[in-house]
Length: 133
Image (cartoon, rainbow, N blue to C red):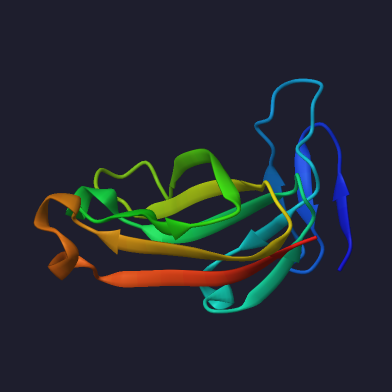
């Protein structure tokens, strides 16, 4: 896999797309990886200090939102929502970012749920095995 960075974009050649980097003017995040629904239950590699970005479809107006179920060896460094359109109630993309903090094999598990309704409300799950080198 090849990755390129500049001060504005993190480019993942594996999926041939750009993602705007919000690390701040004059700084770029350490090269990382972008995951989405297609990467569910896959094993991926990232360097220590690298940023792992997870992009999952979400419609928070239904009350369902993605949240971290379990994470080890990763520090959450970002959580944002990108609206799919300007329409009220429109779905969009939840963007969660994690920095790899220590070498090893780690688990990342997310769930799409209504927090106030508890575990019985979980509508979807996302998981990945993360190898940090």
